[in-house]
Length: 339
Image (cartoon, rainbow, N blue to C red; front, top):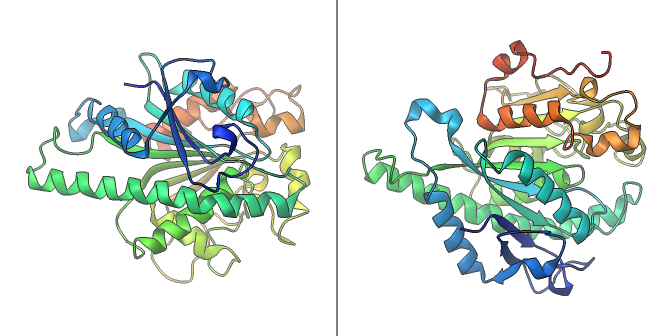
């Protein structure tokens, strides 16, 4: 089975700086360096789906009590102003940290979208994100259909673990990639008739998210999007740091009076709701203490993915370890910087 997986929204054969108006392209690879397109094999959408289903079916079938050891199919959505060269290097490095070796969490798929702006180029970036969100909606919708089918197969086979889904579906989104995901999940939720009690995503990690920090609060400008994300996800974990200078610059250019989730954390804990039940599957973690004083404010924006403490925290979140256990074990706090 392939080791690396790529769904590209880029033009110019998957390496361009603009969106591919002809649609998504699919690639697999057995080895890097992944920033060389020659090391990727282009496949058809059908071939990609077949290979992915086979890879997921090859995961070990575990009894229900070992849910935390279940393998993942994880979608990685990168952030703003990222080239093909940068996104594939980022993906290869993170795959080596979380999705390889004896402690591998499963497999990871890079969704590579062409951000056209910068953190201060608000309108170009958001326009590009909205354009690509429709393509990501198609990916999420196919994953949703696949999961529903696996659930039905499990029911028909009286819970036979060999016939049920052996993989969790998770997402790691960074920076502006969270805005792409936000819009895509809102569209997918509508497309699937706003299903309740059906989780598309098991664990969602919103890392340094460049979205409104009141996203999940009733009455907020983007709350309809937030409701969709919360309803389609079992647990949402937002990783943030007030030391993130990139999002400090971004905050003044977005909704007036609304801070960035990746810089300030949730506006309210738990998010405000006017009807019950409350949104209790969303939480945030201040990761500032993981980063040493010599890590600059701009560098903190991406430091989550190269810092041992945050990598280990992400690993345990993806495994599904309870938040209370994570806090009690000290995994939500670092020792590199004073609180």
